[in-house]
Image (tube, rainbow, N blue to C red; front, side, top):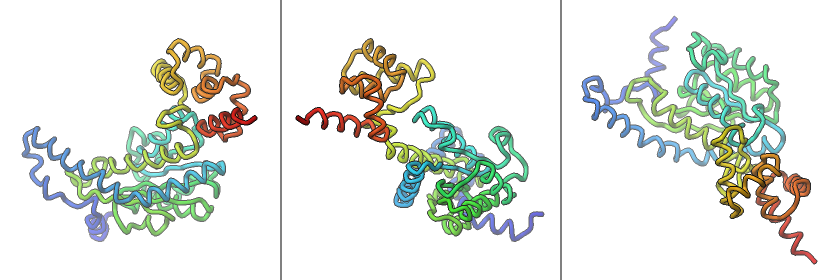
Length: 312
């Protein structure tokens, strides 16, 4: 049952405070209304910028986990959980990784992605059980996501993760939260009160999405999933991605689109392998061996090949 203390605790959160700039939002004409929302959003990137040192620490942990065969696991409820699932689901097509490498868990399960599951976020035991259900190990990194920093489901997950020996990261929009006391690293961009009081899918959600983008993208770059600023490990699963793959091969090697298409076919539709074959003249088998020796890092494989060819 909700009591006065619970209401006071909620009102004490930065994310739940009333925004003095939007007190009359219901009276605003549409141009002023959307301008206000846009104006509030402008500060989100700056709030994330202040957390860059902590974000960098988290990326280093995630990189180490990936190199050790561990996983990045997002866990949250409501909008926070959905954003984690979204980021996780976009990693396989972007970087050609297994769906098990970046995992998104949401209170209430997949049903909660589209429909609110009443009470799911209030169960700390379920948070632990969901991590137990995917076989959490001490090689993994668990990122608990909750704007309030006090969601029981996420707190239970972080407690279980620490007992298991996994690295833990808290992503919240309220400083000094309970989550921060249960995680190794805390990322807390303070975006201030929402234009619509308590609707944390707005600025808070935007801040969380920006942080999640950095965590997964930076870690994937660090383990060699890109070459320069190109997605050379993308999974070619539709016409748009086929066109992008051909463009990447043309960009990196200077070949024509027709030649790029032929090279992709020779490589088994592997962009990274096709680039290496084209730049070095090695056949598919030799290129794969060189890429394996470089740990899948294309730039390193190219340098190794050029270095060996320069030797007498």
